[in-house]
Length: 443
Image 1 (cartoon, helix red, strand yellow):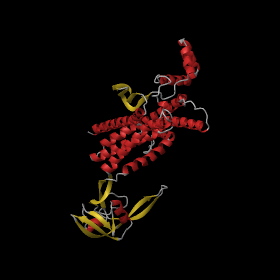
Image 2 (cartoon, rainbow, N blue to C red):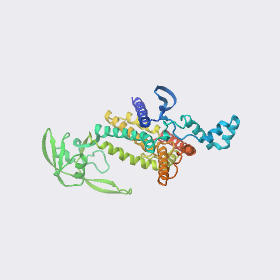
Image 3 (cartoon, rainbow, N blue to C red):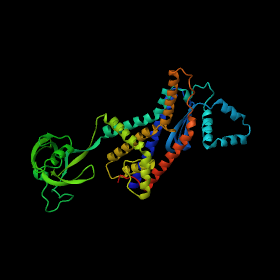
Image 4 (tube, rainbow, N blue to C red):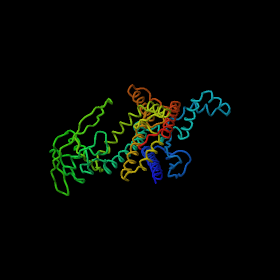
């Protein structure tokens, strides 16, 4: 059963990832069509096509590997210069053409291939249904649409998690009572240990603590803080039992505990102890808790992305040395799938497992949002950066009454894009190997 639950968890993450990708690409598709851009394909996944159907001018489909997706928009870049087209058409000899391209080097060939593939989507200079002819703000909207959909999906998931399910909180209802005051560091009672104050004072499992020493308490953390600050002191507990309030008097026992400071040093402190264990329940949060948690996660993920090369290098070191990985460090899809499987297979109530999966999927969508905003091609942030540069050039020309500049030819950045893709592939490979051989585990 545990293995089956693990597999179900992995499958659920794959399905959740596919939904996230579908929404991301829909975020690009809808504004692109709204602004009149011709979209040839809307595909979820990569590799062989499992299913597709054409509606109007767009082919919608699902591919075998659900680790990405794309839409193909006409004229992502301006067409090649006519002089280059004439030169290519004039090359009647295939050998001569190959020689000319080889003479330009590997990256020059890549640039020309990118231009040729782009030109096939443009129907002449008068074609108005191309991406590069959109106003700058519309191009930005189209490219922002994908990441924003992931952010909105994450907000919905966090709202389900925090407002729909709630946060597991230690409440003021007593779950069980300790029989004794165990010695420092001990978890079980010894014959010489004194009786626990709460049980001796008549506190019962099921009682709900309303106030401690005259201070009303909303959760167990508040009650515990008052008790721990009162070693050896007499406290008044007001509890609700069977619908009626009762007042009990109890003297907090003295117990030594180890306190760890921020610099890692430890000291011994004396705290109050009653011997009460709380009941944990899911407490629903206000409706704004979901968006707040989403934006807090954006900041946390952005901090990781900013240091991604360093963190991946640290992960590579732990992969070689077998050292402990940073639990808050980057993960590959393999690591995320493994965590999802562990969440599903853990020995916990079903609601706890659902909450764990929703939290993981929400965090994954935050990662997709932040990662895609990196201003490097082929990521969405790279296309936004190109559109902003194009808008800046046009604004400069208009300000100084210069001739309108030519559209920015992003195909010139193909070599940089190639290097970025190789770097992302290398980092992904390191994370996948680490998630296989030195994984981050919940257990």
